[in-house]
Length: 179
Length: 434
Image (tube, rainbow over all chains, first blue to last red; front, top):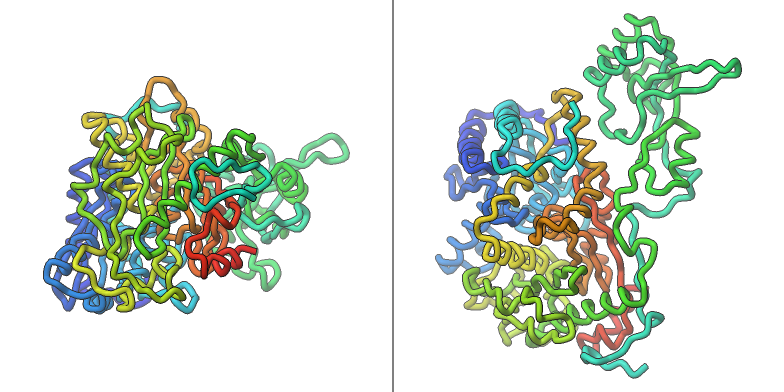
């Protein structure tokens, strides 16, 4: 598990707050509340939030949404692949929940510089919880710095709200819930 | 053999095509399963429930969810003795090494005398393993892919159909000019229809709008695999013909084999869009989701279920009751989806529940996890991916028990001719498989 040993700088808190705003947007749209922002040289250049329900595509996590925004922007600007790779290597991601194995794999493929996350994801986490794709050994894999535990309480509380509010569209449970 | 590469009417006998199940972990003899040490204590039966509740709060057994907290042992006099796991024991030193203070206080409060016991580290995957595990300490046994057809073998009919879809994937992978790419074909095995198919689009892809094409995508009940040409659709990537002509590097275009190479210049700049993450699986999932939205525009029930499934569990500050629910979900997942997929009241599947996916090459970790999220039931691939494969080669995602969905993975060994992507290089490709 990526632990939070370094002191959290106020900057990280500020960016994480914006990621949490994205997560709240997801919550308002009945999506699992996870949000993120991508920062390049102190400037927020993309944001994203979970859209798995709306798209019926369970891979549309916040990180993937934000990444797609950047790829589109940069290609419109006519940047080459090498330029884009260089840009990603200067980017920091702030996400409210530890990236899942798929997203961690994606971030490694893109060669992102660094990520900060809120709560750990102990079912799907790809940055320490289940797999450690940010630090995988291997000649080709790209590592990135990773630090968790930024505003964990807020991130969890959003998730908790989500699961507690239930869903008006939810089908009948297939089995009685255990108390 | 009279099989011609990629030909349509070629008849294959079952002997020519081996379908091999790739289990979640490398097989270990049941009596040699890895164990961990735990600290346990004999307790009074009357205290059992109170003690468990308290312990689950102060020392939940994080990575040993398959292990029962209490062991009931029959003693000689016909009486029962209950032992309770207190916490993990430190492997290095003896007794009171790394015991958390909470647990120490607990031991003191109830005047327990602790002893070290061994428990099996991983959940049992077979009955034989489970029997052995319980000799050490009782565990629970929930075969994660128990209900998935094919693990115990395929009928001749199923084999033929699997081989046909694999050939279809191979043809697709071969179809883009002079680059070889990976192909993914999502299939509903109950109707033998292609739901969606795609090739890698890392180096070139068409815009999302133009890809939505129900009529051509095989959901028409009249189409079946017998006429694969019917599925030819726009979604099929057109890669630029300016591809690298160096035969030695031709397989470098398979995204899952070299996920980190997208930025290398040797593939040339194209005027079309490109995207480092548009591996065949990701694109095929997107297409199937697009179709689902088109075919069932107002159906809200999918969303509701995603909410139940696509959850992130809370860190260990969470109450034990929530935790138990989470693990219950894990356990029953396989069965429920099977049932739901077959239930008559929903024609529409939930994501890709019940579907199969066929690849030429074993997918990378990003793609494999995407298939967990999208709930694919079975994965078939023809060629292992030694550089980045996530289903047995480098990672073994199907063995991660914490995931909330489990698929079964198979390798389909086809005759060489069918995987003949390039006469010069096919031997290299297949060579890596043996």
